Length: 182
Image: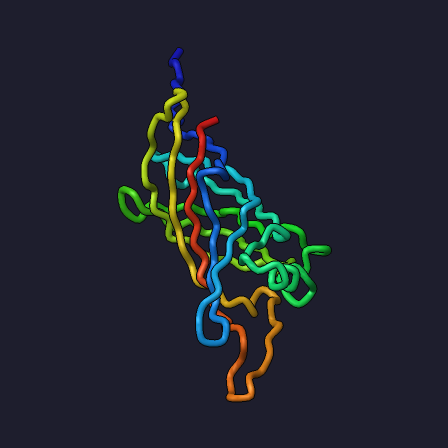
């Protein structure tokens, strides 16, 4: 009889939103407007020995959009943009994780905004793990991507009398995650 040893090296982490941020920026007229989503949750399952067994799940409360301007935020929650009454969540669910280098991964998955699901690949940097002062283990990750908002049904715009449009199509998204081992 041969004993089989469990060699799993996977660790599941819950995102700590107090030490994480999801931000975006988009061209508005001549400058860029920056915003964030303060309400989100998710998990990261990291297996450094077998990265293909890793996964990421993220759910963002679309109504929490915050650009530091109440009227603009109300407009973003409306049917012109996120339509939060019918599409309250923005989600990302990974389907594949591939190690590119010792601390970088391509995380492929489905991003769903306003009910429109698109496959994307996030270039993720693993920043490492550390023990916190309370004995817990934390891991940190960063990624950024540029998406075309129109591909997700966010098509509202206003023509400018000088030509062009008020809101740019490209949205730069930045994610910085600190997560706690479960």
